[in-house]
Amino acid sequence: MAPDTKERAPAAEVAHMLQNAFIAALEPTHLWIEDESAQHAGHPEARRGGRHVHVRIVSAQFTGKSLVERHRMVYQAVAAHIGREIHAMRVQASSPLEWAPNASDFCTCLLCSRG
Image (cartoon, rainbow, N blue to C red; front, top):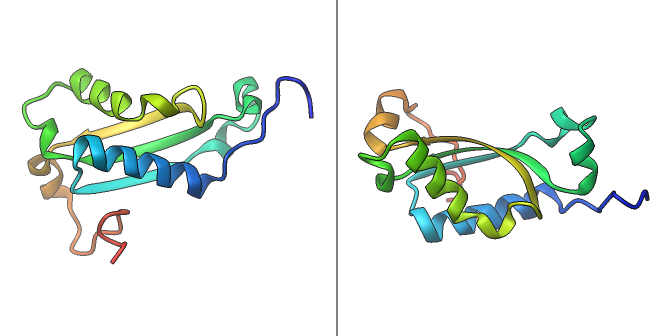
């Protein structure tokens, strides 16, 4: 392995760490975490081990908050993982009222599908 290359944590392990952090900090009603690392395979930083993830999260704590405030809350919830397991994170943060009009009858998020 090249000196600037690290072994990457498995995607499922990273998703589980993030899920636990989000549940503890933001009490989401819906949560999706998608690993998009393969789309960034040629990116120089990708060799350093951090994953690129897309997070969609619905929480009552976002009600009345600006987009910037929501993103800060999301990043703060997983601050311990940024620069380690996570290199980049794309965030979509919604309040329950914003998400409800777009909700399908069968939710496949991590929280609803865990049984």
